[in-house]
Image (cartoon, rainbow, N blue to C red; front, side, top):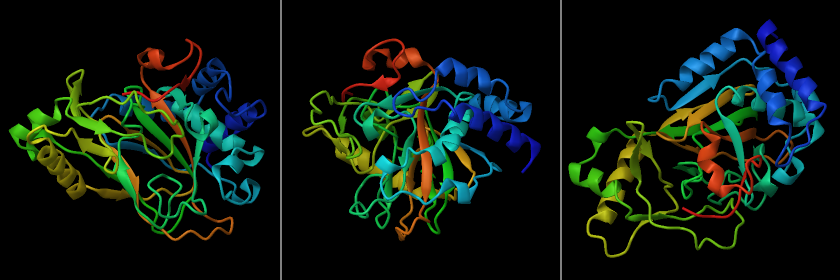
Length: 315
């Protein structure tokens, strides 16, 4: 274990002593101040990466996961927030504090800030991250919502053969002028995926799939849950053209134990290749966080200024 990894791990272990999980796992000020004390090379790398808005993802390699102490991969996310994995949740929170502000969803995994990605029995062929045998289609994380993350942070505790993370993006020159025009209008509906338990999705409104933020292209789409508005000429064809371009651009990123990846949720979509689950305690297990660069942007979706949890389902 390198000195840098040892330093991060010791800081995370100290934070884990007071880790509570749920919607407020640790005081945010405590995490941010601790993150400022991480090794300079790590802080410098993540800061400089955050300035490059063309990146699809940033990968930090070399963190050490003690497999014996971690224990078996749980069979459901409800059992995954346990003392054995608390140190790794804290390590992810520490690195994430150098990228953005964490948020969570009232409708997802009991409103936890740090969520878990692992295969579950009965979900093998589902369209959510607990699937395995079925490929997880590429998507903007929580594409249905204006409060969606700017970055998605993933820490791999255990990998699985074949279960690569997929990434893709699209450039304006890949699409026709007519398609760009249509994708920039509110001609599309994006439904929440089944990872969200909210029963009322009446707040879903038509949205554009391409936009701009500070002069940079912003992409918003979910391959399995996006459809065109009925009666809008050319909308279905524009959606098909975008899907084809993203399909053609898909490439794999293999996450191994100890890898931490921050996906730019504004200009890249991500998914996962299919794999065969074993359900023997050795399956793939990731910790996940949602991050925004400006917490105030999500204020209308939160119950109060200090809450990090997005309430309700709305576009």
